[in-house]
Image (cartoon, rainbow, N blue to C red; front, top):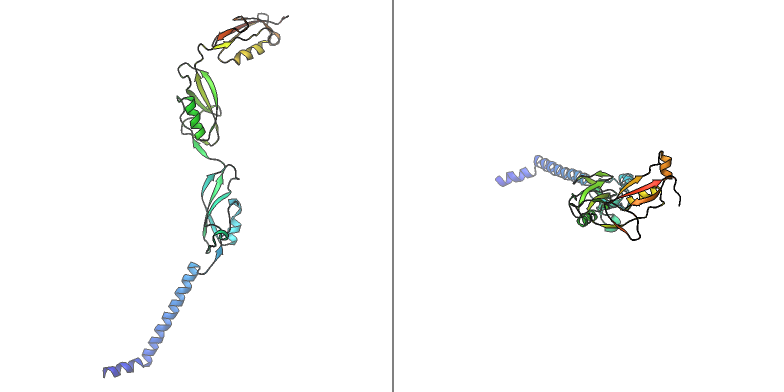
Length: 264
């Protein structure tokens, strides 16, 4: 009796209607879900990744927009040999080299070149000249040396300068900047060859003494009234007196006597 009722229900219009409705809803739902997922995931879509290496980041926006791709700069790499903004790396790589395609709106991540890099200035004061030079070389700084008389800091850095001004440690400077190191030099007791200043103008004599280093120059010219007199005056004697092969200690004052009425 129950079996007969079940068979009658299964062949009834009501059951068949409900069954068709369920199958239809299921079929339409699966189709709609698949269409939605295909739309969202861009299923079966293949976009070729262009080769950006060597291009400039300022020139790739249109190329990527036409391919429905975007890009992001991850960071910059110091490379003074290339124009700033040159693309050095990209991810993913170009399809031509990998055979891999991407989907619409894929982000291409790039690394570009820069021509300036900031480097931290070290503290070199009181360090030995040789140590200071090695540190600057390791940090890709250029440098020049200047010497200053000092018996206490002989061979050590007294001051560090950048563009003529004292530079504090940890200050960030462009790589390749020129640093001036003021190095102490104990010149006490160093013997130098005594120059012959006879017949030189006062300016010439002063320049020669100055080029010797830590020497003092004292000019005397009783008949020099005007600047024109001084420019004409020539040395007729000096103290210490010149002698061939004579030596003089550094730091000594060289006095000269000059006259504008010089004659051989």
